[in-house]
Amino acid sequence: MLVIGGGGRIGSAAAWDLAGSDEVDEVGLAGPRVGRLERAAAKIGGDKLRLHPCDVAGGDLREVRRLMDGYDVGVIALPDRRTSYRALEAAIDACFDAVDVLEEYHRRPDPYETEGLPVPAGITPDEYGESLHRRAEENGVALLDGMGFAPGLSNATIGRGIDLLDSAERATARVGGVPSKEAAANHPLGYTVTWSFGHVLREYMVRPRVLRGGRIVDAEPLSDRERFVFEPLGEEFEAASTPGMPSLLYTRPGLAEFTEKTVRWPGHWEGIDLLRGCGLLDLEPMEVAGCSIRPRDLFISVVEPRLRPLPGETDLCIMANSVQGLKGGGGRTGRPPPPRRPRRGRGDIGDGEGDGLFGGRRRKAPRPRRGPGAGDRRPRGRDPGGGLRPVPPGSGGQGDRDHGDSPGRGLRASGTAAALWQIRSPVRVIP
Image 1 (tube, rainbow, N blue to C red):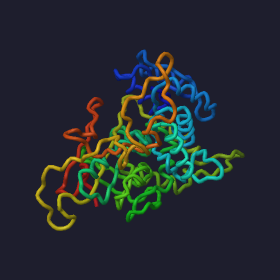
Image 2 (image 1 turned 60 degrees about the vertical axis):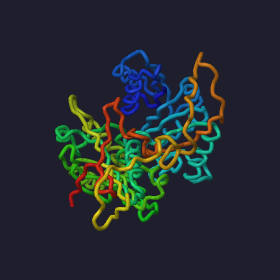
Image 3 (image 1 turned 90 degrees about the horizontal axis):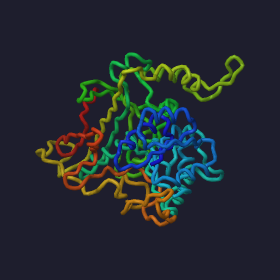
Image 4 (image 1 turned 180 degrees about the vertical axis):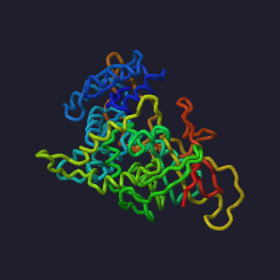
């Protein structure tokens, strides 16, 4: 396994998880800074790690492709869209299967704040995304898009709720990483940094795409706010619309309404409103003491150090998703029929249907190991499951399998059936 961005917060966490698996023989950490790779390796420990200084952002992609050629599969954990797309390009050319954790549906690039997205001249971003998809299919490469906490597990749980209904109409994802309540009191905005703060601020500033009346529309940044009680903790949180699950807009066309919202402690969004109103999150350069500087860059430089977790502080991952629709003859008005056990869906995560892997079918057999002494390399263009793919469908399950769970990592997805026409998380919305 090769982790591109293995010296970062998310990449090093992925590498730690992989290094602890008996099914993984070797974990490569790739990144531009040797010091960060060494610090990550020291924290992870063990004898499976290999360090590879490699600059995806500005280096020679031929070097990246050669590195990929020595591994079976990869995780792309890069902090912005420019580097993510460069890594994707290299993976396609190297016939290298990979998972990308950025909240981007590479087949439909987000048009706002492109972060240096390398769209070739003469084509639109959507045409560029389609060209990547075609090239991946031709090379038999499977690339799993947006497979993290959110997007990722959030798509899977929404898909699970959809499959428990006969007809789903409305879905809302409420997800976010926040510090513990005690830790939040020690930091500005009640927030601590667990991944790229610059990319967090981008999410706060761009117009999110949502479903309204079955149509994809651009909403106002941080709109459609709500306050809710997350019942397992008995705590109030606030959520606002952000562009965190873009693939679901295209892979669940039967939905009439869908919004993804970021969850924060109360007061956070008011603080962001103040910063936006003061222009401190703008990207237009200003002259300050004879120097040209972007306000957002200055803000990040000053504030991010104050948002780093202090020793002993912990954080929380909140996910409170809801799906509404029709089930078992019950309607959304009038008295619903008596509750009964929800029917299991018939799909399977990774079966290439619905909100599934981006284009193509699920791989039928494991890919041969590549690298020195590992046998023949898989020929290009032989895998019918190739293509750029969004998060697995999270659809349904077979028998008593629950695809929302990951027992080996202490994770379990839970939900509640309200009557027969609403699948909801343990959330109580505050008017």
